[in-house]
Amino acid sequence: MTQELHIVGGGMAGSEAAWQAANMGVQVVLHEMRPKVKTFAHQTGNLGEMVCSNSFRSDDSEQNAVGLLHWEMRAADGLIIDTAHRHRLPAGGALAVDREPFAETVTARLKAHANIRISYEEITDLPADGQWIIATGPLTSQGLGAAIQARTGSDALAFFDAIAPIVYYDSIDMSKAWMQSRYDKGETEEEQRAYLNCPMDKETYEAFIDALLAADKTEFHEGETAGYFDGCLPIEVMAERGRETLRHGPMKPVGLTNPHQPDVKAHAVVQLRRDNALGTLFNIVGFQTKMKYGAQKEVLRMIPGLENAQFARLGGIHRNTFLNSPTLLDAQMRLKSQPNIRFAGQITGVEGYVESAAMGLLAGRLAAAEILGRDLPPLPQDSAHGALVHHITGGAEAKTFQPMNVNFGLFRPLDGVRGGRRGRKDRYRGYTDRAKEVWTDWLAAQRVDAAAAE
Ligand SMILES: Cc1cc2nc3c(=O)[nH]c(=O)nc-3n(C[C@H](O)[C@H](O)[C@H](O)COP(=O)(O)OP(=O)(O)OC[C@H]3O[C@@H](n4cnc5c(N)ncnc54)[C@H](O)[C@@H]3O)c2cc1C
Image (tube, rainbow, N blue to C red; front, side, top):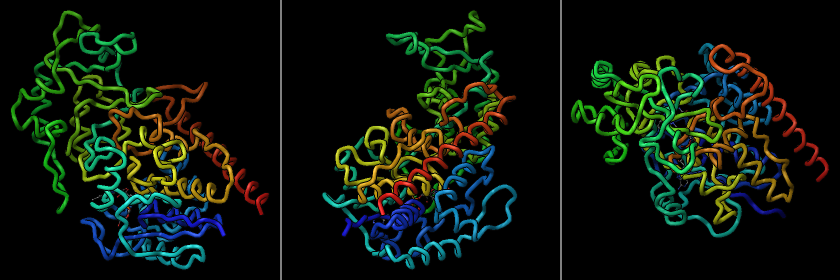
């Protein structure tokens, strides 16, 4: 008799993890606290409930990284993506879903699976033994959150995300921006050129502040109260405190010389910092914001150098429980200090229904393989699943780690394709073709392995 796999949380990640592991022949116990214990966002006791929008975003697997994740999940017999397709609503190129029948079907399929048992209870501790996957999401219950924090350290678990927008490097106009750390600080040339600077004259700064104050903002959800910590005030709140506040905070112009105009002193400077080891993504330092997405793009494109910026993700501040995965998790998504526990879903620092389900798919397969004593072939980094899990477990900067959507900036560059805006279509097609090939091989190798084990 093989060991059972316990999965905590029956949301996007936990439901998918249970399905994948059970299909590999492992006995699964899925622990879900709803409907006994509620969250402020979930409305039902169903598994796989979509808490807000009913969209799985783009279904285009050739030109879009989320669409590619859909494709990979379908190829891996994913429960969430297959059920989403069964309850698809018309939405152009997006995969919109009829949420109630979707969650009801996810629940029914999991309940009907011979290898899955569902236990409706809250888990409040990290068990010392057995195989576990924690997939309790952004609204992890207080008791379990406290237990995770006690085990990992208070810096390693966040309860809010304060996300600064992230820009694709190749969409930044480097004829206006330049690389330099304030006062050229740093031992190496790389450190002395660690920041990307966008200068503003007085007129541009004043117009920027006006736009920031006038922009549409989102409110916190009921029950999602957040006192702002002074270290991560939204930029619009700083601007409300005084028109000069940003110029003395994240936009201070000191210690920098613009090589394009060495004699002109900038009135303010917006700084961006590398967000991944590949150097394809840059976050706008200190620019967490609650501006609505449309307004955010308009206001940020007023920054000289960012007029044509493409965003890998926009900023936000939300209630969100997530780990500092780059320091805590190994490449197999296990807690380094306690490898009988894996994490999956949004709590690992990915963001979104699709990304969370994808991390559940991986965690379920990895845990089942470990229980069955099978070595899975190494996960291909050039697949969408591989690029995302590589980012959260090592590729991202641990110090500034914030939740991430899947995007092409996480993919290793391709040889021989054109950079910049013009080459984008071919480049994206190159990424998706390469990903599909390596993902198909990875899945096929597991089928051979499973057949050999029978
Ligand atoms: C208010 C809000 C709005 C959002 N809007 C969107 C959106 O529009 N689009 C989008 O893509 N993403 C959105 N998200 C993010 C979304 O929650 C995730 O993308 C996705 O649901 C995460 O999947 P998950 O499986 O990690 O967590 P969840 O889907 O939240 O599942 C976690 C499950 O664990 C259970 N649980 C928690 N603690 C315990 C415990 N101690 N014991 C047992 N069970 C427990 C919960 O009841 C829940 O069922 C939103 C999040 C929030 C909070």
